[in-house]
Length: 346
Ligand code: AHG
Ligand code: MN
Ligand code: MN
Image (cartoon, rainbow, N blue to C red; front, side, top):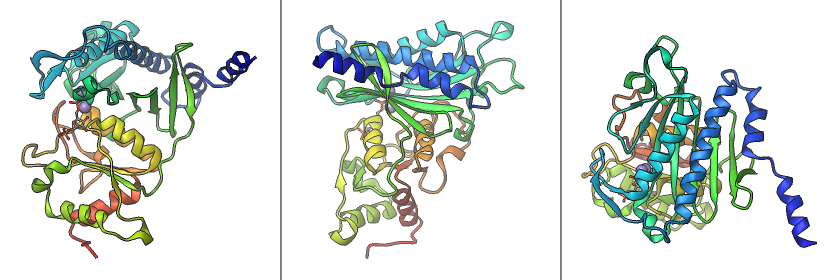
């Protein structure tokens, strides 16, 4: 009896595929091709999830021995995730250009006249990969653009569009459950992978983020190299003012996508500022900051460089880094005020 009841409950959820098809009719740019692209991304996510779930059993932990284009140690799973996404996007045929953290150049899928795919996908195949061996959540982040009409060939220039031009963005968290969250500019929706039927089910419809949250996420080990305004803001958040919810709590996984997901649902602010080591910040504009900025804004939050809107930054390089303040709207605005010297500790 009980299992029958459970089956009925599963059937009551909308699948990602059903949701995408329903939305298709409501988007200006949306055609079957865009829906197929989203499907290809979700298939790759399921494959990466499959690798992740077996990671302690088969030998996919550890480092490849390579240093990636970022100068960072590449993990075996970084490469596996990259390969799964590239393969799924190539096979799907809707994508003309891929930019990946794990590949120095943009990857054209088909060049010239044969190129039928009209979408550009920029991605961080595995975010937080240094956490894999210790079972902390990791994720995938993706950003989707149109190949501009005037461009015949999908070259790197086609990918260097500001975040405001995104037509879709999302992420997957491989955590206690596997969740895919995405936007096409009409709000934010989240889907949980049901491993028993292999489908992403709509579990988080129309996500909105609280205007203010009780948590901030920053690598405070870098405190000495933060600019003065940020130091003051952190001290302000740590002050004991129970009447307005201070002190806030610190939560920092070291997996951007996992920190972002928690803050999105619960309210909070993620910060990766410029530091002495990473003078332009650490996170990458095109496949970390922009896609999650799109999600944050669509959920009612914000994303800033500290002085301006992330999605308006004109990109110069595929792998460029950017200082990032992202999350609940009022917290991002507070950060900007402190950085501008308009506010101090009271
Ligand atoms: P990636 O694993 O894709 O290289 O990204 C790592 C990023 C991000 O996920 C995380 O928030 C940040 O690096 C952590 O950096 P620190 O260890 O410097 O705090
Ligand atoms: Mn990353
Ligand atoms: Mn990565």
